[in-house]
Every structure is written in structure tokens, then in C-alpha cells.
Image 1 (cartoon, rainbow, N blue to C red):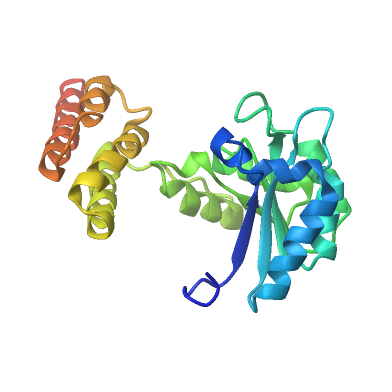
Image 2: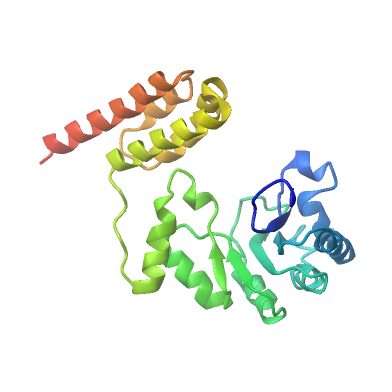
Length: 244
């Protein structure tokens, strides 16, 4: 990967909680043993000439939260930065992220540290930075179907001004651009099927979008997906005008 891509860094994902990854003794399974964390990171650092970063969770379950130990192991092994999600593997995406544990990790390492978990708004990003003392914030699920979350957050952190969310028309135009670029990489058949879940994210929270979500989940071609999404925007704007 280091030799055959133009990537600037190599990131080791020790946070993935899904079963198919855990069964391979990978992802969050590494979090049960700080010594293994050290060995893995050290081996990758020795093998490549690019910075190596590590993404992890605070632990496996409530009885095995080795957040500080694992972060320190990664640092000793040569990691250039660490990003940590404030839930355990067992929690998956349920419950609340523990920002207090993230704060403890930050206090006990010297390399750049990025906090992650329950950052749904620009205000959340500011709050997690203030509470944990982290050097940066990592935004995950909140950016699905909502890439504007990134620049709105950066703008808010830099200026204190909270920019408005884009209108549905702007969201759908971006969604279709997303789909066209995906088609260019994977071909129409695979891309459209993969995009179905993304369409639901782009429509998330939009009033009256339920039917469009159902229809998008059955689309097979670009022209079909485009008609569904543009049709939703047309109906949304008509209803909005009627209420004025």
C-alpha cells in the first residue's frame, strides 16, 4: 500500500467493531492486549517510510477499557497520531461516547490526539475539543449524506459563526454528483446499488422523504435514481411554496 498508492499516511484501524472483522482477529479485537497493539504498530512503522497513525476505540467492553495503555503502546511503537472513538466494541454505536476517557488519554500521550464520538453538530465538535483537550476532532457518521458538516464545523471553530444547513435542492445535486463519481469508479450497476444507502442519508431529516427513500432503495440505474431524487426536490419545493 505504501509503495503502490499516493497516500500520505498509513492508518491502522483498530476500532472496527463488526463481527466479520473481529472473527479475523482484527479491528477492535486488538484492543484486548496493549502488547499486541505495540507489536502491530511497530511492525508497520518499521515497514514503511510514511507516518503511521492509529484509529481505535476506548476498549473492548466496560471491563476491558485499556484506552490509555493502548494509546501509550501505539505511541511507544512509533505512531505519529491517534484517533479514538469514545465507545467500546461491545457498545457498537449504542449508548453515549465517554469523553472523560478520551480526556484521560490526551493527558497521558504526547503525540497528536483526535477525539471522536457523538459529534453530530459543529457545536458538538467545539464541546468535545474543550472537554477532552484533544488536538483535533474526527467526524464520522455525521458526515454521511452531509459533507457540509465538515466545512460548517471548520467555519464554526474558526469564527464562532454557525452557517445554515444547505437546502434540499443543494443536497440532492451533491448526492447526484456523488453517484456520478461512484459510477466512474465502479460502473453503473454496482455504484447505484451501493449508493442506495447514501441516498437515504442525503434524504435524512427532510420532510416528506419516506417514499423517496423507499423508491431509491430499489433503483437499479442512474436515470432512475436521478428521477427519484429530483422528483422529491420538486415536490418538496412545491409544498414549501404552497405554505407561504
